[in-house]
Image (cartoon, rainbow, N blue to C red; front, side, top):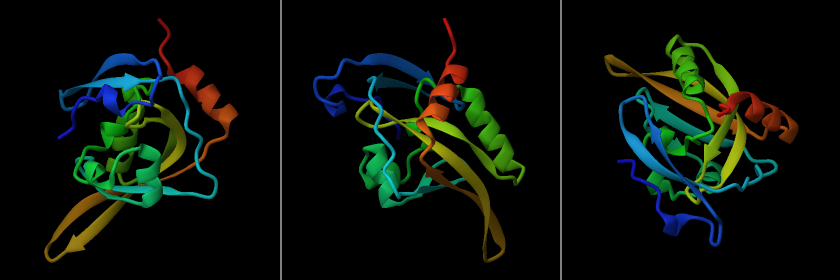
Amino acid sequence: MMTDMREADLVPTAAHRELTLSYHDGRTRRVLVIDQEVPYPDGKLIVSRTDSAGVITHANQAFVDMSGYERDELIGESHCILRHPDMPSAAFRDLWDTVGRGAKWQGYVKNLRKDGAHYWVFATAIPMSVQAASWATRRYAARRRAPRSTTASRCMRACVPRS
C-alpha cells in the first residue's frame, strides 16, 4: 500500500516542498520534493514490469537503484509511487490509453525518488500478453534510457503548469 513520504527518507539538509498528489483511483499521497536531479547512470537501462492495474511485478537492479527504494518496497506497489508532481496526469492517461490499445508508448517522464530528488527518463512502455493455461492477462513492460538534458529542460518548460 502506497504511503505518504517521510522526512526521514529525504536527502539530508535539503529544503523540501510538501504537496499532495491525487491519483486516478481517488487515492491521495503526501509527497516531499527537493530541487535536486540525480543524473541517469551511463550505460544502464532501467526496466520494470507491471500488471494491467499498474502494480509493479518486476524491477531490475538499475530501476531499484534509480528509484531510491528497496526492491521489496517496489514489488507489489503501484508504479505511480514514482510520479513526480511536475508530471501532468494527462501524460499517464495517454500512456495507459496507448498501451491499452496494444500500442507502444514513448515519452519523457520526470520520476520522483524516495529521497525527494528526481530523475528524467525517456520511457518506452510496451504491452505484453501472457498466455497461461486457458486465460490471458496483460502486463506492461517499460524500459528507460537517459534523455538529453536540453530535451528534458524543454519538456519541463512545456509540461509544468504555470500559476
